[in-house]
Image (cartoon, rainbow, N blue to C red):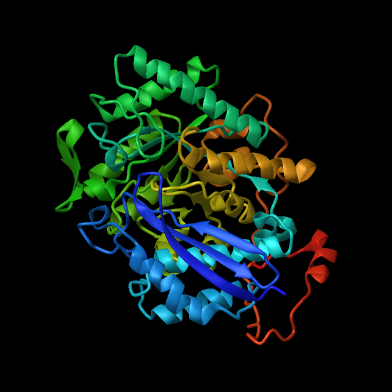
Length: 482
């Protein structure tokens, strides 16, 4: 039976040496799900609250012992006895237990750890990969990696104003080759940076963080690296940016310290319009501040018909924020970060809402990561078509890429690499006529998402329990819990 028998939380370290929450969920049959919660450096002010202890004498106040205690007491007492198949019911119960709009009492890090571990335990119980359990038989699209190869902003020191400069191998024939392309560009970039006399130190997400004289200098160096690695800029490989400009928004102006100037919202929109017209930029995330809704609408009107405009701090993976952005035409893509909202159910709901309105979805890591590779499975489960999980370096980043390699192998001939179809409505003209060895397009684009199902609550007394054998006998058409 898939009844939850025990829940154990503990404090562990993330990739930046900061404490975070790990949770183990045990089912009565011996199945176990383990999840480690990520943590961000540049966080949106509307994100669910990550509970920290505040004891300056321990981890400089960043300890998570209270969040762990909440897992081991309040949450454990209420969730033991639930069927792990009832993901939605369990997540809703934890939200109700917390009782705040932003999960401030129990902590989003406590709640999310349990939420993810429950899903992983159930997948093990059914002897299915996590992506198959979550997404069902329709989960077969491998995402285009959005590789952060140049770091700035809060992810590095003495670097550019903008936080992330990324490459996307949209022209690769499959995920394995796309990963190779990105890794070769990354290796070439290291040599280019070194040969120009800059440091090859790296930031939180593995990208190089040289002290450059200008923001555009990062673009120029990356373009040189792409070409020297043997790939065609604007045909096989495109650029993606996450400037994270909420971090440089002060008193109604965008302060570009590297360039010694401040811009209004209108000027910032013109700045991006010039960049996307001058450089092969296919995706722009957080190009305006999280509360600058008027600026976002201007940006979408200016370039949203041919550039993916990703809402991160603007949306914080929140259904209500997504609804507003759809209504106001304030972006056209969701960055899905599970820890921004605090439960798997809510993150999936925001993603499905976005997809059903014609938006794209990018499954994303955080700057503070671990060996946990859940988002790789989530990207495939959602058929998101894109994943943002850092440079092809550092084990906390590579863990996700390696999991996607396993998933592609597991899917075999059914696997489809999203490639250019990841950008169905936001394609520069060159995308529709690229030469090269791209795969056949996925019929009709990426698979049409199904709405989030409302599951019947499963009684805690274990009645009406579906057997593992029943699930396994129907695994070839398993619909997923979505």
